[in-house]
Image (cartoon, rainbow, N blue to C red; front, top):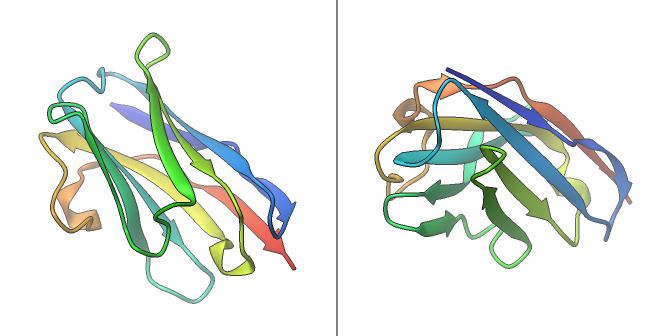
Amino acid sequence: VQLQAFGGGSVQAGGSLRLSCEISGFTFDGYAIGWFRQAPGKEREGISCNSSRESVTYYEESVKGRFTISTDNAKNTVYLQINSLRPEDTAVYYCAGDLGNCPLVIYEEYFNHWGKGTLVTVSS
């Protein structure tokens, strides 16, 4: 079981990026896929989760309205579209997965499968 986040980079405030979480070893059908980020000097925080069983997506308040999860079943990939980027969005972004539904609060201990992160740097 492997997940790998791609697509990070350096952008100016107001810009957009699309991060990809490529999944191998399982299909995300039946899984919850979460997105997390860890800013410099801060703890990792959960920001979004997609539940294929429930066909719902959850977002934390800090990203609601700017971040959007989408999926491509054929590519077994989950995307995180990030718009209106702010300097405070600078962080390493991770995707994680586990069987079942999304937790009501997106916390890292819920997920057993993690990928390496991808760095997003937003300049003002």
